Image (cartoon, rainbow, N blue to C red; front, side, top):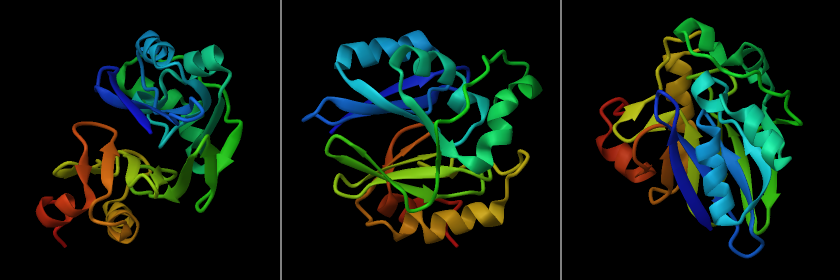
Length: 208
């Protein structure tokens, strides 16, 4: 498996380009800005992008959807509960940030769904709390998960934006992410990667 991380946009969102070494097929997760920077990594990787995946649709995670979809002809996929946020350009106006309109999704993802990309199998988990349709993409065989703004290294996603809920976020972390093996590597929407076990032991926000 190939994983390239690119920090994009004003909030330095982690955009991930994830690919299958065998077939050279891949996905882009959360293209939040700087589309040319993302496209350069795609070109250098040699991957054919099959999907653009939004863990959720705040502007800093979908701000470059339009450019990446247009350049790669990939299918855009996200949870249906994120559609109002997607159509509102991720709430960018509230922060005074210009964001291009995103295309509508080609695929509305549901919990339990699996996306096959080459030899990689992305399992779709619904992990709301930061936003109503937040998703985590879990690759069980590779032991990695891409969770957007749910759980960070020594932190959790904010819950004070419209549609957020601390109790729901806590449930998503406890019942979904913490049910994964301790050695699972979490690739979050911001900051460094971590592991499930490390956050169970030392994250001050999730010591319940």
